[in-house]
Image (cartoon, rainbow, N blue to C red; front, side, top):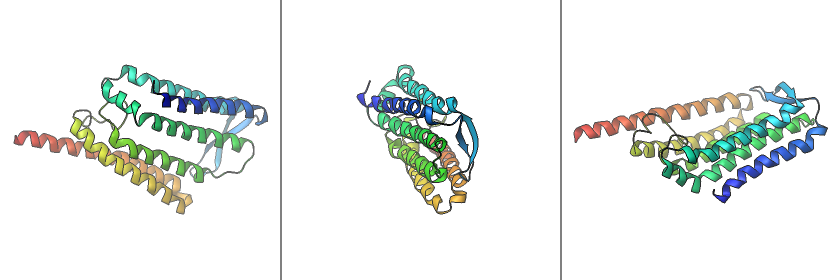
Amino acid sequence: MNSRMYYPLAIVVLMFLLGIYLYPQLPAEVPTHWNAQGEIDDYSSREIAVFLIPAISLFVYAIFLAIPRIAVFKRNVDDFYSNAGPGFFTIFMLFMFGVYAFSLLAGLGYELSMTYFIIPALALLFGYMGYIMPTMKRNYFIGIRTPWTLSSDRVWKKTHEMGGKVFMGAGLLMLLTLLVPDYAFWSSIILIVAAALWTMVYSYLEFAREKRGRRKH
């Protein structure tokens, strides 16, 4: 295993340690959900708040480790895990840690703005995904997996080159939504959905272009 794959695991361990340390100081119920305006609208028991996100993160980490063992395009997946993969997994776990810490701090009585936390966090995650997207090679687990990208290395490459630009652009636009915080959450959701839909459409257009090229020859 790449030694950098221990970084996301270290973050998961840190989550458990933080939760265990803060557990005695937390109230019986801890905020675990916020509405689109960034206001608390649901609570969970202290046990759920402390252990659920670390447990989910540990499960996701186990999936990260399992993917290379079951991958069809193993060489392509191994290449990702040797290069951009550990960085992405670390960023993802930092995102999970941020969400977790935010909830615990809210439980301790700190008045924090969910909007000004979650939007930059999503923008960073989305932007980083866009940054590494052109390095991804065809596989069934990571990247823009449509019937058309999976059918052709060329379509996969073109789609991920375009997708990288779209995702980074969407991440930047998410930050700009903070200028109108009341609409930042839903605006960001629209950007995420639009980016995902466009890359799907683009993959089909590239597939159709490749198919036409074959017919001409």
